[in-house]
Amino acid sequence: MSPTATTATTVENTDEADVEEAVAPPEEPVSEAGVTLELALGEAEALRTWLMKPAQDGTTSLDDPLVSHALTKLAVSIDTVLATVNVRHELQAVGLDVEHLSDEQVCDLGRRVARAATPGFRP
Image (cartoon, rainbow, N blue to C red; front, side, top):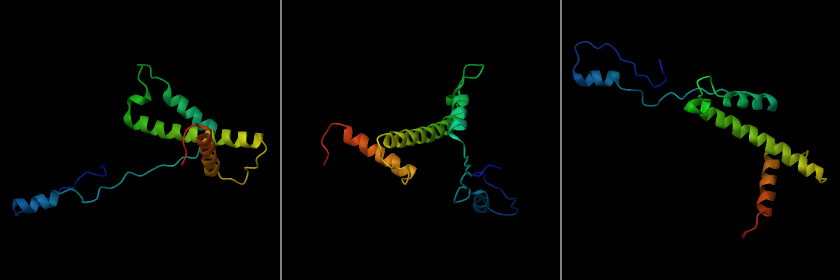
């Protein structure tokens, strides 16, 4: 039974209003369970590459909305990790000690540097 399916009960000798109450959908739909995977960067990139390959009939995983959504989430995660690794490497290459910074702090610093390097007015 799907999480939003309704359950009908057998009601004998009742009027129509009672039947409607017995078949009414639940007030709060059950949310879908989530899954979290921990993959090495190489594994995640290999999975993304494999999911992007077209099938024999020429369709791709992007044609399926659920797979496309999951692939987008995977791509964002991979791109974030790669950006963090690249920013950390570049900062260390110019002599900055960033070992004590979390990945989130490194990403934020990279965004701030990129914003500062972009011409335009800053309040």
